[in-house]
Image (cartoon, rainbow, N blue to C red; front, side, top):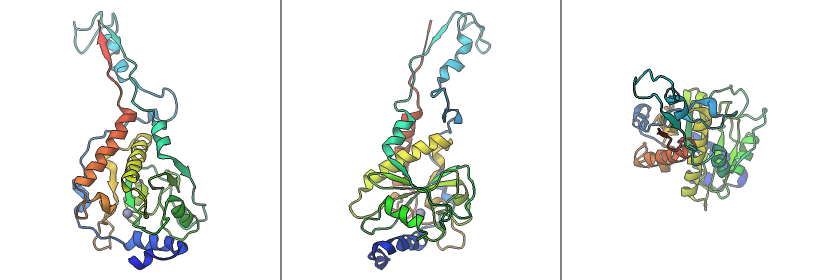
Length: 283
Ligand SMILES: [Zn+2]
């Protein structure tokens, strides 16, 4: 692998391609059953664009408690009670979290190999990768250039992230080719690649990735259990079928403590934009 990494900038892209396809090994936990921890119910898509921006669940739930209304579920309890709802809002607006990721859109042209023949998609999963491209300067913009110039063959994915920013290569309603050939990982998931070039902080890159994953969960009503490592998707015909990717978030090539730590980080950011403050009922 090493010789691919020492090549010039132009072939950096090619080495990335090679490594993405062949570069790692995994072990065979079928379907990544260990991954399916974590709660993360989906959130209603109603929050996406229009008003009302925030939802006050206690208003609806407590409406039968409004003064004078009968309470069918607890007769005798409710009459005369008034619900007062606090200014219950998430700690952070989703748009603020998204702004922290610093996403620039730099889409592949429709003529690029990575975009040709791609289908429309309603994303159900978010797949996390790392580039395994340790070349100097192999940052999101460099990968974007390689994708736009069709230097990575038919490979494509949606976002590349490093410690400073993210570049989006495809709209999230179009499939990429980053996970499992014709499998569901490609057909239904948003692909995010984390950079590994020299000098790039892995900690900050992972943190930024967690923010983006949380935002995309919110935007597309994707539960935490469907934020998965590339490892999750078996690649039929490959040996081993499960790729050790992203290698630095797996333990011995499979999801474990490090992956659970990443999930917890994603959940933390997701909660920031979705969990409402307490509401109070009083007489
Ligand atoms: Zn991968």
